[in-house]
Amino acid sequence: MEALKKSLWVFHINTGGCNGCDIEIIAALTPRYDTERFGIKLVGSPRHADVLLVTGPVTRKMKSKLLRVYKQTPDPKVVMVVGNCGSTKGVFHHHYHVVGPVDKIIPVDVYVPGCPPRPEAIIYGVAKAWEKLEGEA
Amino acid sequence: MINNVCIPVGPVHPALKEPIKFKFDVEGEKIVGVDVDMGYNHRGIERAGMERNFVQGLYLAERVCGICSFSHPFAYCRAVENAANIEVPERANYIRSIIAELERVHSHLLWAGVAAHEIGFDSVLFLVWKNREKVLDILEEITGNRINYAMLMIGGVRRDIPDEQRAKLHKVVDYYAETLSAVEEVFMNDKTIQLRTRNVGVLTKEEALALEAVGPTARASGVKKDIRFDQPYAAYTDADVKPVVPEKAVGDVFDRIWVRLEEVKQSLGLITQFVDEMPSGELVSEKSVIKLLADLSRVEGEGIGRHEAPRGEVTHYVLLKSQQTPFTWKMRAPTYNNVMPWYPMFRDTELADAPIIAASIDPCIACADRVTVVTGAHTSELTNIELHKKSLEKTRRLQNG
Image 1 (tube, rainbow over the protein chains, first blue to last red):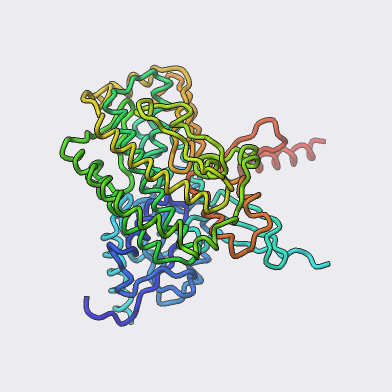
Image 2: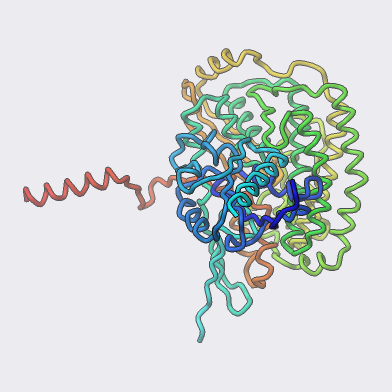
């Protein structure tokens, strides 16, 4: 990876996942994987984010919240789905309170499958998101 | 008189990663009331479990929560085994207990990091999470996965712990014996942590008993409550597990930190004991999954499975009625009990303390979001179609009448 033109700031939203992906995302930020050395960090508001990182299969109650967060994220943005349930609903198919997968509700650019994916896979996904953002710029 | 201000927090907020909504009534900076709105994480797992067979149910149980991904299937297995009178081989019991204790180490360390993050002490978050990777490594080596272990089978376990991994488990315990002291040093002596956690979010023993708190939350308030001690099961029958209770329990956030750090040490002791004493023998009671499912589909009866998860007692209940699937499956996760104790904890504290108090019970919203159907109360739910039907009936009634 050549020098980054910009640091990627990531906003993470859990739409009803099991925490498995969420703790792996935080694990990717902590010393062993340490994505902050590339300037990749989690931010507290979607309005500051370049990447919207979505986990979970989208429950009925979270659908409108996901849409609102998507609208709050400024363009250009990349939406990244981490985990099987966000990508395809996975084990939660046919559940009455699950309206996902995520790409049914908002457009998705990068999928990171796995239940949960390893932190390396998540970092690879963020790198793909970066390629897409830089390609657009 | 100025009315109280209501500050809604969530469901998407930076402090807790999971969707949950708090409504704080504040008077200046003081919290005078709190309301919790849950259900954002409800996925309908219990209902789906009633449509899938017992082995598929294991996968679902595992994905109730990614942090207690051994506790839920463990309780589910114990419930089904209880209903079907399945005897679990002794070696499988030991392996189950070892993984359960490894999970406790990883969960408590995870929590310690999150707690430090909530009070703005990120260097401790990184210190603790760096140490935590070691236990994930050994879990990955034993089970094949870092998070969802897929280790359990009804009537036993899927994988063995061979001798070379036993040596590695000892190494992991030694590693934590060395590194935990640094973590403990920070949490017990650092001035920032003392200032932010002492006498914050107090839950008295009486309140903990009245509100049925469980797990480290209850123990930090001085309630001696631990399923491993009260009703020993699996390999805990051979171990001397004492509930970790502080000598002079205040029930504040600091006590909860202390209890969890002590429990990590207790778990490391248990792991050493179980690894040393692990007997040889079979791994599962019934090797053929097809025969197991056929046997289970002929069982009638109910079973209950309890396990002391890192956050407290988790209970699963199943009712089997000679079907391929459980007729009823109900789970009660520890966070469900620990939601009510939030109310006395939040009362009369500063708004700035809200994140650490919310985090102090180690909430797992994914575990707790279950639906409850109340019969006998004056509520009923109507679907769209039923409502439309009612409307049609009224039109007809009016036309006729």
